[in-house]
Image (cartoon, rainbow, N blue to C red; front, top):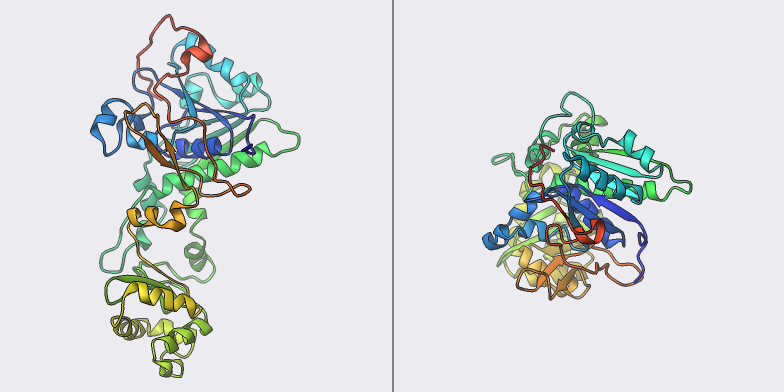
Length: 391
Protein backbone atom coordinates (compact mmCIF):
# COMPACT_ATOMS: atom_id res chain seq x y z
CA UNK A 1 0.00 0.00 0.00
CA UNK A 2 1.37 3.42 -0.97
CA UNK A 3 1.10 5.84 1.96
CA UNK A 4 0.84 9.65 1.84
CA UNK A 5 4.36 10.38 3.16
CA UNK A 6 6.17 7.95 0.88
CA UNK A 7 9.28 9.68 -0.46
CA UNK A 8 9.68 11.99 2.54
CA UNK A 9 12.73 11.59 4.78
CA UNK A 10 12.65 12.34 8.52
CA UNK A 11 15.62 12.69 10.87
CA UNK A 12 14.56 11.56 14.34
CA UNK A 13 16.90 12.93 17.03
CA UNK A 14 14.42 12.26 19.81
CA UNK A 15 14.42 10.20 22.98
CA UNK A 16 11.96 8.19 25.08
CA UNK A 17 8.38 8.99 24.03
CA UNK A 18 6.98 12.30 22.74
CA UNK A 19 9.40 12.63 19.82
CA UNK A 20 9.70 8.92 19.04
CA UNK A 21 5.88 8.65 19.08
CA UNK A 22 5.65 11.58 16.64
CA UNK A 23 8.10 9.91 14.27
CA UNK A 24 6.36 6.56 14.79
CA UNK A 25 3.25 8.14 13.31
CA UNK A 26 5.22 9.59 10.38
CA UNK A 27 6.78 6.19 9.67
CA UNK A 28 3.35 4.57 9.55
CA UNK A 29 2.27 7.25 7.09
CA UNK A 30 5.07 6.11 4.79
CA UNK A 31 7.98 8.40 5.66
CA UNK A 32 11.54 7.11 5.72
CA UNK A 33 12.64 7.77 9.30
CA UNK A 34 16.32 7.73 10.26
CA UNK A 35 16.87 7.67 14.00
CA UNK A 36 20.03 9.58 14.96
CA UNK A 37 21.30 8.23 18.29
CA UNK A 38 24.31 8.77 20.48
CA UNK A 39 26.99 6.05 20.30
CA UNK A 40 27.16 3.57 23.15
CA UNK A 41 23.62 3.88 24.43
CA UNK A 42 21.24 5.48 21.99
CA UNK A 43 17.69 6.41 22.91
CA UNK A 44 17.19 6.03 26.67
CA UNK A 45 14.01 4.07 25.92
CA UNK A 46 16.28 1.22 24.77
CA UNK A 47 16.89 0.61 28.48
CA UNK A 48 13.29 0.98 29.66
CA UNK A 49 10.46 -1.52 29.96
CA UNK A 50 9.16 -4.51 31.85
CA UNK A 51 11.64 -7.03 30.35
CA UNK A 52 15.03 -6.68 32.07
CA UNK A 53 16.84 -8.83 29.52
CA UNK A 54 15.69 -6.65 26.62
CA UNK A 55 16.80 -3.58 28.57
CA UNK A 56 20.29 -5.03 28.90
CA UNK A 57 20.34 -5.64 25.15
CA UNK A 58 19.32 -2.01 24.46
CA UNK A 59 16.06 -3.20 22.94
CA UNK A 60 13.73 -2.31 25.80
CA UNK A 61 9.98 -2.62 25.45
CA UNK A 62 9.57 1.16 25.63
CA UNK A 63 11.85 1.47 22.59
CA UNK A 64 10.22 -1.39 20.68
CA UNK A 65 6.78 0.20 21.10
CA UNK A 66 7.63 3.45 19.25
CA UNK A 67 10.39 2.75 16.75
CA UNK A 68 9.34 0.14 14.19
CA UNK A 69 9.97 1.12 10.59
CA UNK A 70 12.91 3.38 11.44
CA UNK A 71 16.59 3.11 10.64
CA UNK A 72 19.30 3.86 13.21
CA UNK A 73 22.63 5.65 12.87
CA UNK A 74 24.96 6.64 15.71
CA UNK A 75 26.62 10.05 15.74
CA UNK A 76 28.37 11.96 18.50
CA UNK A 77 27.28 15.48 17.64
CA UNK A 78 30.01 16.94 19.85
CA UNK A 79 32.56 15.68 17.32
CA UNK A 80 33.16 17.79 14.21
CA UNK A 81 33.45 14.74 11.96
CA UNK A 82 30.09 13.42 13.10
CA UNK A 83 28.47 16.85 12.80
CA UNK A 84 29.54 16.93 9.16
CA UNK A 85 27.99 13.51 8.63
CA UNK A 86 24.81 14.77 10.26
CA UNK A 87 24.71 17.84 8.01
CA UNK A 88 25.04 15.52 5.01
CA UNK A 89 21.84 13.85 6.19
CA UNK A 90 20.11 17.20 6.68
CA UNK A 91 20.79 18.22 3.07
CA UNK A 92 18.45 15.55 1.73
CA UNK A 93 15.94 15.43 4.60
CA UNK A 94 12.43 16.86 4.60
CA UNK A 95 11.89 16.88 8.37
CA UNK A 96 14.02 17.04 11.50
CA UNK A 97 12.48 16.29 14.90
CA UNK A 98 14.30 16.83 18.20
CA UNK A 99 13.24 16.97 21.83
CA UNK A 100 16.35 18.35 23.50
CA UNK A 101 16.10 21.16 25.99
CA UNK A 102 15.98 24.55 24.24
CA UNK A 103 19.48 25.77 23.43
CA UNK A 104 21.16 22.37 23.08
CA UNK A 105 21.15 22.33 19.27
CA UNK A 106 22.52 25.90 19.21
CA UNK A 107 25.39 24.89 21.49
CA UNK A 108 26.17 22.11 19.03
CA UNK A 109 26.14 24.61 16.16
CA UNK A 110 23.11 22.88 14.63
CA UNK A 111 20.34 25.37 15.26
CA UNK A 112 17.51 25.92 12.80
CA UNK A 113 18.93 29.12 11.30
CA UNK A 114 22.08 27.28 10.25
CA UNK A 115 20.36 24.11 9.08
CA UNK A 116 17.88 25.98 6.90
CA UNK A 117 20.84 27.42 5.00
CA UNK A 118 21.87 23.83 4.27
CA UNK A 119 18.30 22.87 3.36
CA UNK A 120 15.89 25.74 2.55
CA UNK A 121 12.91 23.33 2.60
CA UNK A 122 13.62 21.76 5.98
CA UNK A 123 10.70 21.36 8.38
CA UNK A 124 12.34 21.55 11.81
CA UNK A 125 10.20 20.47 14.78
CA UNK A 126 11.38 21.01 18.36
CA UNK A 127 9.35 19.30 21.09
CA UNK A 128 9.94 20.43 24.65
CA UNK A 129 8.12 20.54 27.95
CA UNK A 130 7.33 24.26 27.95
CA UNK A 131 8.31 25.62 24.54
CA UNK A 132 11.39 27.42 23.25
CA UNK A 133 10.90 30.62 25.25
CA UNK A 134 9.30 31.81 28.46
CA UNK A 135 10.43 31.57 32.10
CA UNK A 136 10.24 27.76 32.21
CA UNK A 137 11.73 27.02 28.80
CA UNK A 138 14.94 25.50 30.19
CA UNK A 139 13.24 23.49 32.94
CA UNK A 140 13.22 19.69 32.60
CA UNK A 141 9.86 18.08 31.97
CA UNK A 142 8.54 14.56 32.08
CA UNK A 143 5.03 13.33 31.43
CA UNK A 144 3.86 13.40 35.05
CA UNK A 145 5.30 16.89 35.59
CA UNK A 146 3.31 18.17 32.61
CA UNK A 147 0.15 16.37 33.73
CA UNK A 148 0.48 18.11 37.09
CA UNK A 149 1.26 21.55 35.71
CA UNK A 150 -1.42 21.44 33.01
CA UNK A 151 -4.14 20.75 35.57
CA UNK A 152 -4.83 17.23 34.31
CA UNK A 153 -4.12 15.70 37.72
CA UNK A 154 -6.36 18.23 39.43
CA UNK A 155 -9.42 16.89 37.57
CA UNK A 156 -8.47 13.19 37.62
CA UNK A 157 -9.86 11.03 40.41
CA UNK A 158 -12.66 11.98 42.76
CA UNK A 159 -13.03 14.62 45.43
CA UNK A 160 -11.74 12.26 48.10
CA UNK A 161 -8.71 10.84 46.29
CA UNK A 162 -7.63 13.41 43.69
CA UNK A 163 -5.14 14.33 42.32
CA UNK A 164 -4.24 11.34 40.19
CA UNK A 165 -2.19 11.19 37.04
CA UNK A 166 -3.70 9.51 33.98
CA UNK A 167 -2.45 5.93 33.94
CA UNK A 168 -0.37 6.17 30.76
CA UNK A 169 1.96 8.93 29.42
CA UNK A 170 -0.82 11.21 28.25
CA UNK A 171 1.25 14.39 27.92
CA UNK A 172 4.03 12.71 25.95
CA UNK A 173 1.51 11.12 23.62
CA UNK A 174 -0.43 14.34 23.03
CA UNK A 175 2.82 16.21 22.46
CA UNK A 176 3.86 13.65 19.85
CA UNK A 177 0.52 13.75 18.07
CA UNK A 178 0.53 17.55 18.06
CA UNK A 179 4.00 17.55 16.51
CA UNK A 180 3.00 15.00 13.86
CA UNK A 181 -0.07 17.08 12.95
CA UNK A 182 1.95 20.28 12.62
CA UNK A 183 4.65 18.54 10.57
CA UNK A 184 2.11 17.16 8.14
CA UNK A 185 0.60 20.63 7.75
CA UNK A 186 4.03 22.07 6.92
CA UNK A 187 4.72 19.31 4.39
CA UNK A 188 1.37 20.04 2.72
CA UNK A 189 2.35 23.59 1.74
CA UNK A 190 2.19 23.94 -2.02
CA UNK A 191 5.40 25.96 -2.08
CA UNK A 192 7.21 24.56 0.92
CA UNK A 193 9.74 26.64 2.73
CA UNK A 194 11.81 26.08 5.84
CA UNK A 195 9.62 26.02 8.93
CA UNK A 196 10.41 25.99 12.65
CA UNK A 197 7.69 24.23 14.65
CA UNK A 198 7.81 24.84 18.40
CA UNK A 199 5.73 22.24 20.26
CA UNK A 200 5.14 22.81 23.98
CA UNK A 201 3.88 19.69 25.72
CA UNK A 202 2.25 21.88 28.37
CA UNK A 203 0.34 23.90 25.80
CA UNK A 204 -0.54 20.90 23.65
CA UNK A 205 -2.14 19.19 26.65
CA UNK A 206 -4.05 22.32 27.63
CA UNK A 207 -5.30 22.59 24.05
CA UNK A 208 -6.98 19.18 24.41
CA UNK A 209 -8.73 20.14 27.66
CA UNK A 210 -11.38 22.10 25.78
CA UNK A 211 -14.38 21.69 28.02
CA UNK A 212 -12.47 21.99 31.28
CA UNK A 213 -10.65 25.08 30.09
CA UNK A 214 -13.71 26.68 28.48
CA UNK A 215 -15.92 26.15 31.53
CA UNK A 216 -13.37 28.24 33.41
CA UNK A 217 -12.71 30.87 30.74
CA UNK A 218 -16.30 31.31 29.57
CA UNK A 219 -18.51 30.28 32.47
CA UNK A 220 -16.16 31.04 35.35
CA UNK A 221 -16.49 27.53 36.72
CA UNK A 222 -13.31 25.93 37.99
CA UNK A 223 -12.99 22.27 36.95
CA UNK A 224 -13.04 19.76 39.79
CA UNK A 225 -12.47 16.01 40.03
CA UNK A 226 -15.74 14.07 39.83
CA UNK A 227 -14.49 10.52 39.42
CA UNK A 228 -16.08 8.60 36.56
CA UNK A 229 -19.06 10.92 36.18
CA UNK A 230 -19.61 13.17 33.16
CA UNK A 231 -19.41 16.82 34.14
CA UNK A 232 -22.09 17.84 31.62
CA UNK A 233 -24.74 15.13 31.95
CA UNK A 234 -26.44 12.64 34.26
CA UNK A 235 -26.84 9.70 34.20
CA UNK A 236 -23.51 9.51 32.41
CA UNK A 237 -20.60 7.68 33.93
CA UNK A 238 -19.65 4.30 35.39
CA UNK A 239 -22.29 2.16 37.11
CA UNK A 240 -22.04 -1.09 39.03
CA UNK A 241 -24.01 -4.04 37.68
CA UNK A 242 -24.65 -7.51 39.06
CA UNK A 243 -21.14 -8.66 38.16
CA UNK A 244 -18.99 -5.67 37.29
CA UNK A 245 -18.95 -2.18 35.83
CA UNK A 246 -20.70 -0.56 32.88
CA UNK A 247 -20.24 2.86 31.34
CA UNK A 248 -23.55 4.49 30.41
CA UNK A 249 -23.87 7.79 28.54
CA UNK A 250 -27.54 8.78 28.65
CA UNK A 251 -26.69 12.36 27.74
CA UNK A 252 -29.88 13.23 25.88
CA UNK A 253 -33.41 13.44 27.26
CA UNK A 254 -34.64 10.63 25.01
CA UNK A 255 -31.76 8.42 26.16
CA UNK A 256 -32.60 8.99 29.81
CA UNK A 257 -36.23 8.14 29.11
CA UNK A 258 -35.24 4.97 27.23
CA UNK A 259 -32.99 3.97 30.14
CA UNK A 260 -35.80 4.52 32.63
CA UNK A 261 -38.21 2.37 30.65
CA UNK A 262 -35.64 -0.38 30.10
CA UNK A 263 -34.94 -0.58 33.83
CA UNK A 264 -38.73 -0.72 34.42
CA UNK A 265 -38.84 2.60 36.24
CA UNK A 266 -40.81 4.91 33.91
CA UNK A 267 -41.77 6.99 36.94
CA UNK A 268 -38.27 8.51 36.89
CA UNK A 269 -39.23 10.38 33.74
CA UNK A 270 -41.81 12.48 35.62
CA UNK A 271 -39.92 12.64 38.94
CA UNK A 272 -39.08 16.34 39.50
CA UNK A 273 -35.59 15.33 40.69
CA UNK A 274 -34.82 13.75 37.33
CA UNK A 275 -37.28 15.11 34.77
CA UNK A 276 -34.94 17.76 33.35
CA UNK A 277 -31.22 17.80 32.55
CA UNK A 278 -30.20 20.29 35.24
CA UNK A 279 -32.28 18.53 37.87
CA UNK A 280 -30.53 15.26 37.08
CA UNK A 281 -27.16 16.93 37.55
CA UNK A 282 -28.24 18.33 40.92
CA UNK A 283 -29.51 14.93 42.06
CA UNK A 284 -26.82 12.84 40.38
CA UNK A 285 -26.02 10.58 43.34
CA UNK A 286 -29.67 9.79 44.10
CA UNK A 287 -30.25 8.81 40.49
CA UNK A 288 -27.07 6.75 40.37
CA UNK A 289 -28.07 4.79 43.46
CA UNK A 290 -31.45 3.97 41.92
CA UNK A 291 -29.92 2.93 38.61
CA UNK A 292 -27.32 0.70 40.25
CA UNK A 293 -30.02 -0.97 42.32
CA UNK A 294 -31.84 -1.88 39.10
CA UNK A 295 -28.65 -2.91 37.29
CA UNK A 296 -27.71 -5.28 40.13
CA UNK A 297 -30.36 -7.69 38.91
CA UNK A 298 -28.32 -8.74 35.85
CA UNK A 299 -24.85 -8.82 34.32
CA UNK A 300 -22.78 -6.18 32.58
CA UNK A 301 -23.00 -8.13 29.33
CA UNK A 302 -26.80 -8.31 29.52
CA UNK A 303 -27.29 -4.63 30.27
CA UNK A 304 -24.73 -3.53 27.70
CA UNK A 305 -26.55 -5.14 24.80
CA UNK A 306 -29.98 -4.23 26.13
CA UNK A 307 -29.07 -0.56 26.49
CA UNK A 308 -27.51 -0.32 23.03
CA UNK A 309 -30.59 -1.96 21.55
CA UNK A 310 -32.70 0.67 23.32
CA UNK A 311 -30.62 3.51 21.85
CA UNK A 312 -28.59 4.26 24.98
CA UNK A 313 -24.77 4.36 24.51
CA UNK A 314 -23.07 1.94 26.89
CA UNK A 315 -19.97 -0.22 27.14
CA UNK A 316 -18.10 -2.46 29.58
CA UNK A 317 -14.95 -1.43 31.44
CA UNK A 318 -12.15 -3.59 30.06
CA UNK A 319 -8.58 -4.28 31.05
CA UNK A 320 -5.95 -3.54 28.39
CA UNK A 321 -5.68 -7.26 27.68
CA UNK A 322 -9.43 -7.58 27.23
CA UNK A 323 -9.48 -4.57 24.90
CA UNK A 324 -6.68 -5.92 22.71
CA UNK A 325 -8.28 -9.37 22.49
CA UNK A 326 -11.74 -8.11 21.58
CA UNK A 327 -12.58 -8.97 17.95
CA UNK A 328 -13.46 -5.32 17.27
CA UNK A 329 -9.79 -4.45 17.86
CA UNK A 330 -8.15 -7.76 16.96
CA UNK A 331 -9.74 -8.12 13.54
CA UNK A 332 -9.16 -4.56 12.26
CA UNK A 333 -5.39 -4.86 12.13
CA UNK A 334 -4.36 -2.48 14.92
CA UNK A 335 -1.65 -4.89 16.02
CA UNK A 336 1.18 -5.57 13.60
CA UNK A 337 3.56 -8.50 14.02
CA UNK A 338 7.20 -9.04 13.16
CA UNK A 339 8.28 -12.68 13.23
CA UNK A 340 11.94 -11.65 13.03
CA UNK A 341 12.63 -8.64 15.24
CA UNK A 342 16.19 -9.17 16.45
CA UNK A 343 15.06 -9.90 20.00
CA UNK A 344 14.88 -13.69 19.85
CA UNK A 345 11.10 -13.80 19.65
CA UNK A 346 8.25 -12.41 17.54
CA UNK A 347 7.23 -8.84 18.26
CA UNK A 348 3.76 -7.29 18.27
CA UNK A 349 3.22 -3.52 18.37
CA UNK A 350 0.36 -1.06 18.00
CA UNK A 351 0.18 0.67 14.61
CA UNK A 352 -1.55 3.94 13.71
CA UNK A 353 -5.13 3.44 14.83
CA UNK A 354 -6.67 4.28 11.45
CA UNK A 355 -7.07 2.83 7.97
CA UNK A 356 -6.28 4.12 4.52
CA UNK A 357 -8.50 2.71 1.79
CA UNK A 358 -9.56 -0.10 4.10
CA UNK A 359 -6.06 -1.12 5.14
CA UNK A 360 -4.29 -0.57 8.46
CA UNK A 361 -0.89 1.16 8.09
CA UNK A 362 2.20 -1.00 8.23
CA UNK A 363 5.95 -0.37 8.36
CA UNK A 364 8.38 -2.70 6.57
CA UNK A 365 10.90 -3.30 9.33
CA UNK A 366 10.98 -3.92 13.10
CA UNK A 367 12.65 -1.47 15.50
CA UNK A 368 16.34 -1.16 14.61
CA UNK A 369 19.40 -2.32 16.51
CA UNK A 370 21.53 0.60 17.65
CA UNK A 371 23.57 1.88 14.70
CA UNK A 372 22.17 -0.73 12.34
CA UNK A 373 22.34 1.65 9.35
CA UNK A 374 25.73 3.26 9.92
CA UNK A 375 27.38 1.48 7.02
CA UNK A 376 24.51 2.29 4.67
CA UNK A 377 24.76 6.03 5.28
CA UNK A 378 28.40 6.59 6.21
CA UNK A 379 30.38 3.55 5.11
CA UNK A 380 32.58 1.54 7.50
CA UNK A 381 33.32 3.55 10.63
CA UNK A 382 36.99 4.15 11.40
CA UNK A 383 36.53 5.59 14.88
CA UNK A 384 34.07 4.85 17.66
CA UNK A 385 33.15 7.89 19.74
CA UNK A 386 31.35 6.76 22.87
CA UNK A 387 31.33 10.03 24.77
CA UNK A 388 27.78 10.84 25.86
CA UNK A 389 26.35 14.14 24.79
CA UNK A 390 24.86 16.46 27.39
CA UNK A 391 22.06 17.02 24.86
